[in-house]
Length: 66
Image 1 (spheres, rainbow, N blue to C red):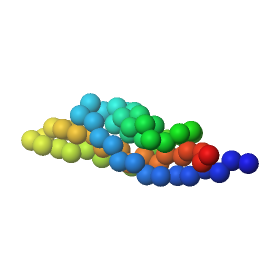
Image 2 (cartoon, rainbow, N blue to C red; image 1 turned 180 degrees about the horizontal axis):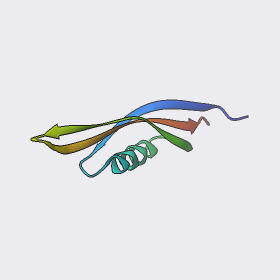
Image 3 (cartoon, one colour; image 1 turned 45 degrees about the vertical axis):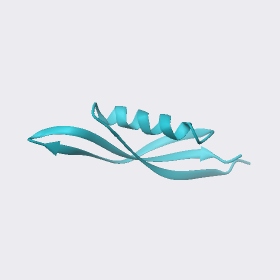
Image 4 (tube, one colour; image 1 turned 90 degrees about the horizontal axis):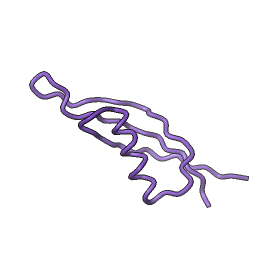
């Protein structure tokens, strides 16, 4: 039987929402084992002078407990 846990991770990128999600998963993977899935709960952007300067995502990561 597997036991899974879900946590929320906030990540950002100057490139795209997809890049922010990748960075969030990669950073979480440095301290979490067995990440099974990433769900993008929300995304937003910071705007300055009419241009997007930062992309942000709120990820829900599911991983298996050992």
